[in-house]
Length: 192
Image (cartoon, rainbow, N blue to C red; front, side):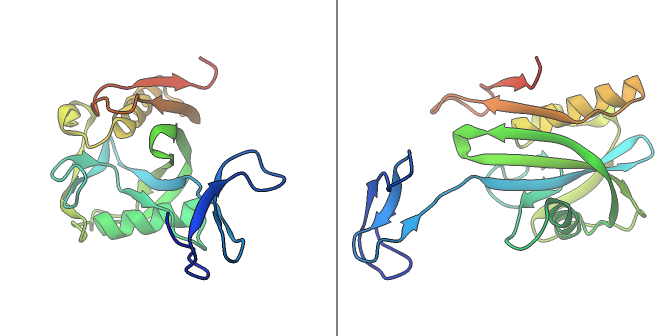
């Protein structure tokens, strides 16, 4: 950040009084510009023994498969965002069942909140951000073609819970060193 969004003046990195972190502070008007993580919210949309995946029509990871999910908008709850993203990306209507997984991704300043959901019908189709939308059984999941590590980890937890006959709520971190490849990461689950 170089300029203040309030007055257009230059900003400097400084630790504001009463704070303990560097922030962008405007030299002219004194506005402190806080930058916080983005929340990504979405659904594991279930139909019988299958889950709904979307093949991405946008970068990053164009052409790869993902759960219907996206950035939370201002003024909406995580639940509202999950419903909206599922409708936007898959034209799918769902009923939320429970929060399933929360993953912190500090290396990109994102937090994922993924809900289990039940598809209300089979009337779904690709939205503007999807090339294709399809139901997959566990054996059909294109594991090597998943867009992001968080999606693979979420699906592994989901299918393991389903096999046990009980769904838990999972919290963990997906950790990656700067400059490492997308496939080089480690998962640290709360309580493990």
